[in-house]
Structures are given as C-alpha cells and as structure tokens.
Amino acid sequence: MILTSTRSFVRRHSQAILYGIVLALLLFLLKWLELRFLIIHHLIEIYIGGVALLFTGLGIWLAIKLTNPKVRTVVIEKEVFVKPTETFALNEPEVLRLGLSKRELEVLAKIAEGSSNQQIADQLFVSVNTIKTHSSSLFDKLEARSRIQAVEKARRLRLIP
Amino acid sequence: MILTSTRSFVRRHSQAILYGIVLALLLFLLKWLELRFLIIHHLIEIYIGGVALLFTGLGIWLAIKLTNPKVRTVVIEKEVFVKPTETFALNEPEVLRLGLSKRELEVLAKIAEGSSNQQIADQLFVSVNTIKTHSSSLFDKLEARSRIQAVEKARRLRLIP
DNA sequence: TTCCCTCTCATACTTTCGGGTGATTTGATG
DNA sequence: CATCAAATCACCCGAAAGTATGAGAGGGAA
Image (tube, rainbow over all chains, first blue to last red; front, top):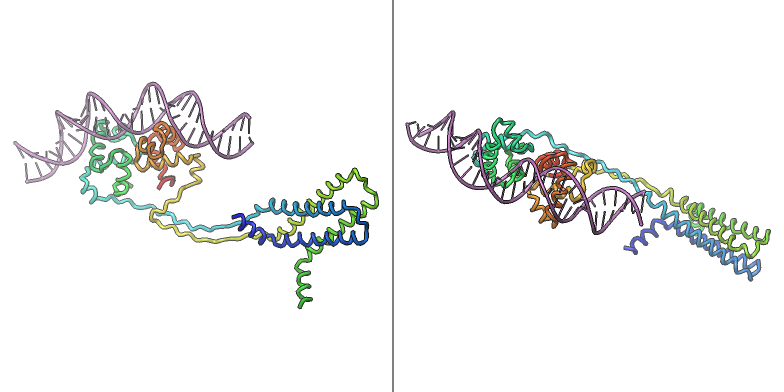
C-alpha cells in the first residue's frame, strides 16, 4: 500500500521532483564555484546551502500536501425511473382461498392504515370487541401473529395497496 | 538529434530552469550581502532561520506554480437504469432530515419485518428496554404512535423496502 | 478536557393487543 | 323450517407495546 502510494506520488509529481534535483545540482554548482573561487575554510556556506535545499524541499512537500485535496470533480448524471402510481386491484382469488369476509378485509385495511382497534371500532361504528374478533380471525387466516405480520403478508398477497 | 531534444527539453522545462536561475541569483545575493555587511558570527542563527524561511516560501511557491496547471476536472456521465423490480435505495436525505441514527434504522427494519421487541432484542444482542428506547425515539421522529404507523410512514418515505 | 450525541440499560406505569370462550342476531340457502 | 356463515358484542387474562424518567459508557468535535 505504502509502496503503491509512493509510486503514484512519484508519478504524479515527477516534474516537481525533477525540478528539485535540478535545484540541487545548481546548488552544488554554486558551491563548487564558491570553493573554486573563494576561500574553503568557510564551512558554514555548505551548511546554509543544505538548509536552503532542505527547506525548499520542505516547502514543496508542504505545498503538495496542502493542495492535494484539489480532487477532480466527478459529475454523475443519473436517470431515475419513478415508479408510476400503481393501480391497485384486489387479489380476489386469494381472498376466496383464504376465506376472508368483507368485514375482515375492511378491518385489515384499517389496520394497515395504522389505526388502533379502538379507532377502527369508532370508524366502523362497532365495539372494540368486534374488531378484536375480526382481527383475530384475520390473523388466523393469514397465519400472522401480529398486526404487522398480517399487513406484511396482505401487502405481498395484494390484499391491500 | 541531441540538439533538437535538448532544445525541446529547454522549451518544455523553461520555467524550471528559470526558477533554478532565480534561485542561484538569490544565493549569490545572499553571499554578496554576507560579504558586504560582514555578518557577525553570533547572528548566524538568525541568518540561517531567514534562509530557511525564505526557501520554504520559495518551495511552496514553486510547488503551487508547478502543480496548479495539473488540476483537471473529470466529468463522468453515467446512465443508471432503475428497474421497477424491487430496487430499494435508502432515502438518505430523509434520514438526515429526520435525524435517524443507524441503530434506529436497524430497529425500524426489524419492526417492518414483523418482529416483536423481544425478537429484535435477541437479534441485535441487546435488551428489550434498549429496543423500546430506540422504537420510542423512532416514533417521535416519525411522528407515529404505533409500530404500524411508523412502518407506513417509513415505507412512504422510502426508508424501508 | 469538556461537551454532545449515540447507544445502552433499568424501573415503573399505562395502554393496547391477542387469545380464549361464549352468546345473540341476521340473512341466505337448501 | 333448519342450518350455516357472518357479524355483532361481552368478559377475562397475559403478553406485548408504548410512555416517562434517569443514568452510565464511549466516541467524536470544539
């Protein structure tokens, strides 16, 4: 991983590295000239040259690190297909197969809407106990153990929208 | 042959060469200043610091100059075909808008499957009380008063398949 | 480090569900 | 008329769901 990233780094910044080498060579040239025409006992110049080189490299590295997030902008055009409003058709064969009564289907629909037994009772003008009876037989016929399971199954069987 | 390649090299890297020359000139300038004003030995640290600072800036400037033209904006156009067959994609903006957490989404999915709180607790290896807490906050955020209402709304908002 | 959010768990309480049993009425059907 | 399915209602009980409140652990951001 480190190897590949290093390799890609080299590839991406090959120019910068090349320029760095060029700079180093120039500095050596400078040093050589200095040694050639000036006095040798000033070792401090070599030191300063090294510092200059080092910090030039540091600056380059810093700049590259800091400007890295200039990532390419990737635009993805998406074609979204909106599902058309499905026309709900009651699966009557299934209703017959399961032996569901009209009232049970009504109650099932109300349950699917999220109504409580009490609310369903109020809406259908019957007592809660009646709704309980209907929902119980509903669960029996749908082999469900809860309202949610009943709604799940009913939805799969196209008994409700 | 060598001549033409050398010329093209110069043309292609004229900037780098220019920068190298500038660098060399700067070094000569420093040298000259040093000789001119006879920088005292106990100020050498300041001098080196200045050099470091200067060349760091130079490096940064160099790197920015060299790497800036390399920024490319790549535009990828993609056509995505969404089949009506059960391709569920989570409505993430809605998740963010409602502030639903990961765990809450998990619980929501389990609820939609028809699991009881106890079953969800067993499947997620937590206590029933935890599931109750999650589902409560879930109902708050979905403005639902029961599991069924929550599932209903979540289905409409494409939070669950 | 402090603060905030998430996840976790607990306790206590109320409401709703689901199961079981049994009963009455009504309408259709043979 | 007798019968049967459907619809209605009641009572009870345990389980599950939902509400309210508090609190601790851990991770990430300021």
